[in-house]
Each structure stands twice: as C-alpha cells, then as structure tokens.
Image (cartoon, rainbow, N blue to C red; front, side, top):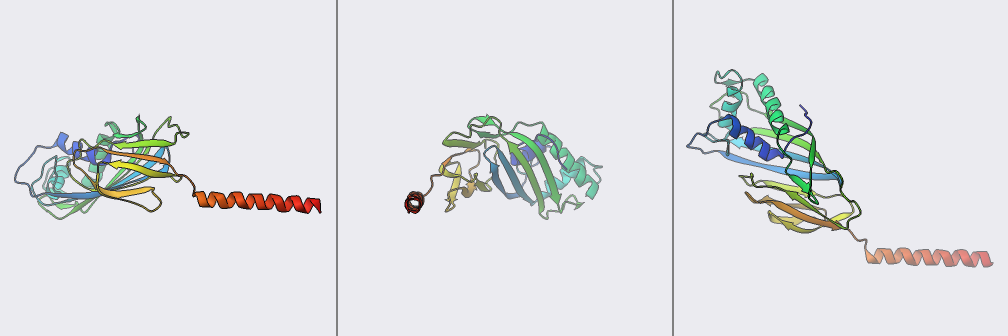
Length: 241
C-alpha cells in the first residue's frame, strides 16, 4: 500500500490515533520500536520503522495492542472482532492520514518531501480485548530538493517534539561523508567509518547531526603522489634511452 507524500512515521501514527479515538485510562501499555535512516545519496533517504504494541488500556498518545485492535475494529464494523480486511482498510487509512501531514525532516534547512509510504500491520486479527503484541512496519522515502552538494558540511535534523516514547535510532549518511557532531541521541555510538550513528532517541527532543566531507588518508595520498612521480621518472628515463 503506497501513497505519494507522507509524514514522519512515528509521529504520523501517533497523530492518527489521537484524531480518531478517545483517551481511556488505566493503561499498562508497552510501546517500543526502532527506526533506521539510510541515505542513498545526499538528497535521498529511506526511513524504515518497526513499532511494537503490547498491553491493555492505552491512549492515542500511548496506544496498547488492545487499544490498537479496538481502533481498527471501530473503523470497521465495531463487532468486537478484528478481521484481515479491517486491518487492510486501517493500513490504507493510516497512509491517507500520513499523507496530509508535513514532513519533519530537514537537510541544511530544506524541508524534506515524502515520495512514498507503506504501512504493514501484523498479528492484529482476533478479539479486540486481546493484549498480544502487534507489529507495525513502515517504510518511506524522502527527498531534499536544492541541496548544495558542493558544501563541505551539512546538517540533518529530525524534529522530535511529538516523540512521546524512546526508541532505537540508526542513521547512516552517504559515502564520502562522516559524522561531526550529534545531539538528541542518548548512548550514541559512531561506526569506524564515521558514517553511522546508533543510540536511543530522547522524548520530545529534536535530533540534529552535522556531517562533513571525508578527507582521504594523508598517508595513502602521499603514496599515490610518490607512485606517480616514480612512474613519471621511469617513463622519462625510458624515453631518454
């Protein structure tokens, strides 16, 4: 199920719940997940998210698996049972809801545009009072227009003012760049090549990362220069002979 445009995955899902459902109490909901960003190029990034819903009670701000099943059934025939067709309709609904929201990713101050979004919900069928875990997978693609590729450094920003839960975060920048500074990620670790940062998000906090153009190894460059000089001298001597 694909749709043009879209939204920041986690925030769009939360907003959809808030718009269509009341807010019950006595929650023991357990919401967790992960999100990865992979830059295919400087102006194109793919975002993949997996969210797990468990427990009972819940609200639009913190939905449990029971709450999610009740929401899916509410938009269906409200008979207390979630069917596969209701899940499919809800996936379509979520994509439509996402399509009307603004993108919350920025590169050098340029707001991203979502070119596609796909949402898949697993293990949601059955009685609405079931508290077994539901898995929601989402994938979207973002493009940044008019990015100046000649700049030595860039700033990637993910607005997190609506992030009400902490999840695992992974961001990989394009080849030829390395991470310079990171804010908004706890327990962060940066890969040996400097391109990938992993860690945990901070609720209600923006992620902002500066990444810079990678410099080649001076030692390697020196070797190339020496080899070039040697080849030139060898060629010159051969001509003299």
